[in-house]
Image (cartoon, rainbow, N blue to C red; front, top):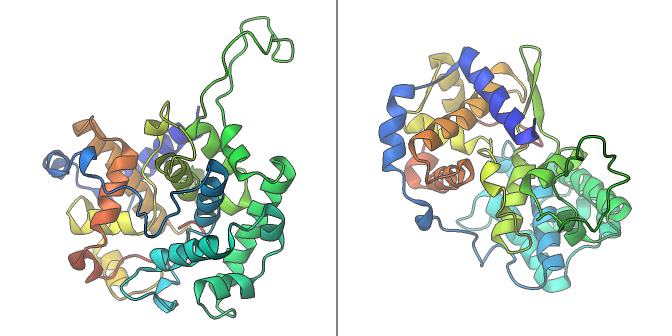
Length: 331
């Protein structure tokens, strides 16, 4: 089973036995029907995201960005850009670094420390999050240097689905020139990144491992949208990117119904424990709700539903209500 299918299966399993988060199934059809079409999606922001230059430069930007695309539990404590969220504060800092000095090399990322990343992002180097961001970049740099010759584009180029051997044929003995090479695969990239500490993201729930891989999946989507990869063959297989904002939107929109005690904790801005049953149920509930929405709207993929809801979450009405937060490296 592909890892993205395991995410769907595990999240459906959690949603089916959740104790604090319920999907309001009867509300899904009307909600899905009211969502905009894919043609209305805003896409990547060229003022924030690096969309020019060659594939190596764009791959370096998005793999670097998504390796540090976490820390929402700390975002209220960051120095934000005027009118910008924590995510856009981080993304803009990286964009300005790439524009001014170019990408970090894999070797440089392997050695980067909290003071340097804090300087790029305009933060206190003693802030707890800075060391976590640096550690993630260290791991990214090590993998790109040791496994891909220091080339970020090679991470994408070599992400291809495994071709099964015919009965009685060994992979080693197959004629390599017998078939055209497979297109790059978003699913294969996610499965590769899932093995790297800088993208790892799974929780334990009632004794079962529940993978989410939020950042590994969003890296695949970002690389495709930026033109650094062509994942057209299987981009649609990605799931919703489970973070804290999309469950918040689904709660306020009446699709996720939370236990009153959990709602009260969230609205008191009480931090949730990453990996706690309630936090896993929020993330898994959002993933499975997106699957139910897609059944009603076959013109949308789960990744597109995610983009619609994440963008909606930037609206004033959603910002006015405290969202669930946990301090972790998953999102």
